[in-house]
Length: 158
Ligand code: HEM
Figure 1 (tube, rainbow, N blue to C red):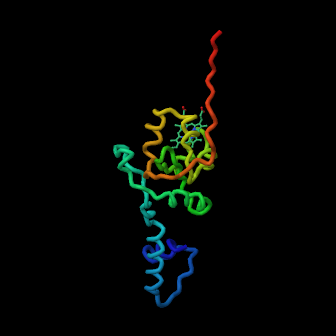
Figure 2 (figure 1 turned 180 degrees about the vertical axis):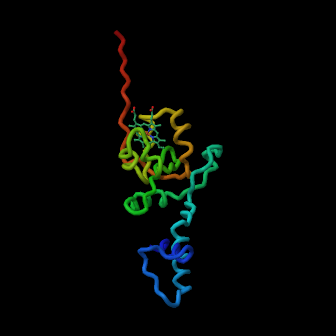
């Protein structure tokens, strides 16, 4: 009720608030003001924000693989949905809920490489339009948990 107490000092008490009749403490007013400031504080700038689409892949900031993999171990607490496609790190933290293929597929690859799986479902055009704005950096040495199965193309000659 910090905001309520502050309001009462600015505009007078509300009918349902108990206000001591003597000695309004300036200390408590400051405490409430600090609390209000906290509520409206901006979230801290992420260490690796989304990069401008004009930046070439090679000029993206390098993110050490340990930090990328770490997103997996902090999955429950921190919740940064980073995935890797062709050594580029994509932050899907907000996009994951809007992903047309559902959140589960992205969630299952957090902190991991999913290059071949990605290219099975998306064209280059989709990557340019939807993936590029999600880039936060480049990395190396993140391996895919699964071996890519061979692609079989039919060859009907008759
Ligand atoms: C950078 C991350 C990703 C982006 C920006 C992205 C974007 C998209 C978009 C725009 C579509 C709709 C495509 C369409 O309508 O033609 C889509 C569909 C889909 N995505 Fe993703 N995606 C990402 C990651 C992934 C990953 C990691 C997987 C799984 C390995 C995945 C699996 C799928 C599937 C299964 C569909 C539905 C395909 C269909 O209905 O034919 N996506 N994605």
